[in-house]
Image (tube, rainbow, N blue to C red; front, top):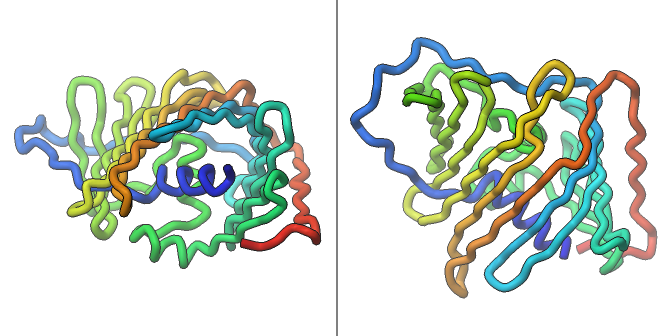
Length: 247
């Protein structure tokens, strides 16, 4: 179960394919502004539904974040405590209480595996609906009637960000990798105030990628039931039982 959760989560961010941009475009805007969630501490509850080619699974998560430092999750499956996750600047650790085992993932290894620079900042941004790569001077900026488009290139990967002109919120991210046919599309919606900014309470992640056994099509739908930000310190209790095996 948690192998699937982690695999899909990483695919959400980093496995992708190349998208062609139409050559007929309106004049590029001189600048582009993105409203991003800012906070000291964030906590919330969310419902996640995972669908693959054959099954559907629902997971509920308690989430706590200390900005630019640590992300903590407690996961339950059909009312049963299923495990936990700790994401910090050094690594990602997933604990499965069901299988009584745990996994530790190093960012350098993940970056090589997915051909993309993976670090804590990228993971945090994706969870919050912020840009996973900050705007750079070499990025392309275009627009249509409703959206400003920020197009970024990172190795073989092209990232297209759609930012709504009125709300300045990131509403869609397309990650694509040239030559593979792999794609990831993220849609953020149901924006509500969180602190002094808007926050996406709902989202859908569509993952299409090739494996040795064929093409896999996975979807992750998430909905925050509750979210709040503040300056009061939160606890991030995380312990791996001694009897659990490392995988």
